[in-house]
Length: 348
Image 1: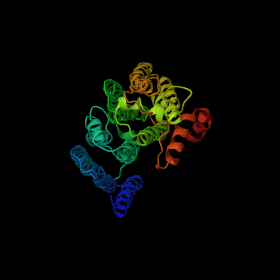
Image 2: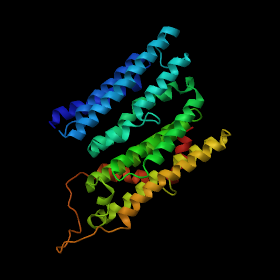
Image 3: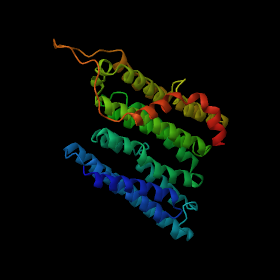
Image 4: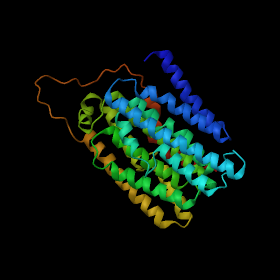
């Protein structure tokens, strides 16, 4: 892609999200979401491949549906209350429509079916943008309107997302689909605690972004898109493979890695709110996700690719890709658990 065009599209992505962050008026927030959607579609379809075009079309249709619902809900709210302010969602009908539309935007269950299909058709860097940056603006709106939303509906969305994310990823062999289901499950963790401790939602979002970035960038370096190609990663890059296994376990939420921190704090908060059954279901749903992360770890570190050629395979893979973003995201994804008290002190 032409660098000027790429720069324009990436700037538009930034502008759209910033516009939604800064707005208190529904029309301005809607405009930011639309700029975001229109900026990423050319990035999705840049490889003129039928799967990429199909993914871009599916993404456009779902996002356009969600945007139309947001516009309809905000107009209904303005008609009832006489105000366009985001914080003034006094109509139950409008607030329910808004949360359903925003859930469709970020891929919360049961509106998650587009997410694995779209992510599977994209290259890894565009997939990374879709899994991280594109979640920010809708989540900002969900956080702003969370006090007006029905708590039971939020709890249901959170539980269904963690269960659907864990269950859906079990029999997948495509790495991008596994990461899509991982994203759905993580969104569920963020939504479940939103009404009780919004700062924990932001903490979970931050850790999720770093862990997912590390996973996507690693797959980009090793050019892996299927589980069976991971078996060849060890002989090419042993250190990268070792850190990747730890990043995947961090995504699963195992101590003493960063990914344990948000899950631990969210379960603690749910228990404080006298919701032991919800906390138990969430913990069991995390085990489902952990299973497919362990599958990936097993394929990467404990299996060796069958080798039928007589020639010697290269032990080190030379790469020209920049490794600083991967280094930073991997470090954060592995080592933040010891600073949990400091993060909690800043958050409260």
